[in-house]
Image (tube, rainbow, N blue to C red; front, top):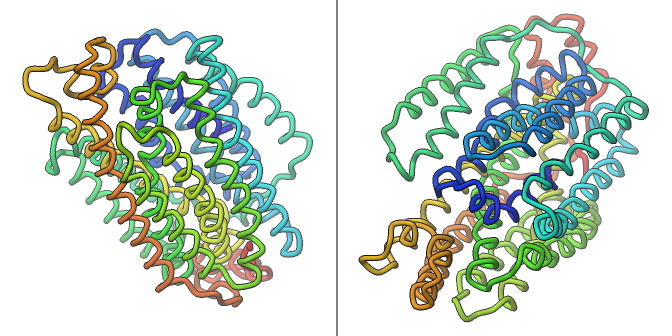
Length: 489
């Protein structure tokens, strides 16, 4: 559901923003408000799942996500859409950490690999179907339908959760309210600063709030007897290397779908449905890469599969950097196929290596920590690549054009002037090449980091990581030492 929602919304952005009269900044907030709230609350929601029950927290998130999706169908202006996206971000933050943490705790070592494969396949199913589904809904109904489609999915998921899913929670331990507040304030301020960076520069109020809150969070989690997040996990090479590599990959990927959707619709003139179908090479090769990657990781280890997959992704971005206004769809189609293949190889191997280091009693917050790092990378990617794209586009547009045409290719195309449209398309593709060059550099750095840091050891997680949640050495900590998760892949 989360994959379908994000990709369908990406396809719908040009139509939706036109109908509700959203500016370029409001359009970015429609996309980023969800990420801001989502990233800010992930650690807290993962901790809540460990404490009160992962299924319970997930079901509450589903209810909130579904209610917000239904409310979105009545939105008539950008402010209302941003508000419901915030509510959906809260619901998504409650849902996401529960998915991997439930797999870790419910399934034993023998079944966990199959469960992870099913989890990845369902995500890929959403990736395959959502662009086409979003395009069909936009073409035949309205942009509101991309939100309404979440409602029946939520209903089905709630019924399945209540009837099929067992509850799981960690042994009871003291709450960490200060850690929750500091993490939420710090991550929200950090993502907010990233979003404001292109318009307001480095020195804004959000930056000191983020620095102080996150520094306080790290200090507090290291001195409190009941930390919400076991930061000692970062001493494990696979966790720290996997997390930072995935963050760099997400920075590279962050703006790709938004940029390519605009290219397809405003440069190539595709309809929403055709733009959705254009992403099929990405989805199909990702499914292939996912299946092949699991087998290769079992045979050769996660480290080399991650490296191979990321190098294929670098080739994708390098190819996209060569696209011009006259390239058509052949080059982007090949590049999308490479991206899907590379991501299918690298991402499950990286997640498997990372999740194998997390003790069961911290499954929820450990999964959330991974999600948080990736979401921060996504927000950085959208902000950095979006800023590069918009500033590069404006710099390449001639003097004297209207402001709407100067700062947005959608505004230039809407003007209807054939000469201005041709210039705008050239300016957009030239700026797009710059953004994808930056993406290639980011993913290459991730590949290097993963190779240097990640190890293919089959040893169990560090003893101190498992006991990090209870420094007193209480009976609860002892009970969690009875069983530790092996690497998921």
